[in-house]
Length: 136
Figure: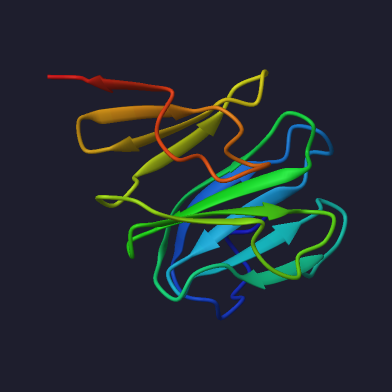
């Protein structure tokens, strides 16, 4: 269980599962993402993704790209096979509270009452949203 381990990375904010290999990704208030395997007592990877608290994590269905968002209004794309640095670094207009990836690789971001979707978000810099929807 993750709840009974003090890993000194700040308060646990978010959790996501890599759908490809079931690795659990935990996002912390210090901007760190730790990756856990159920049969190992320590994190299998730790990465400083942001300088501010993490607000959301998503992993694409193929288990290759991890997308993180932070209270600093940044959204970053990481290759989980090689965590040397972000593949993409986006600055959004407001804080992204949630990110999700579809089976086709379309990335959705939620900021307040606005949802934006992006094509090719992970592979190249998306200049503008593919679709934008205001909820109210």
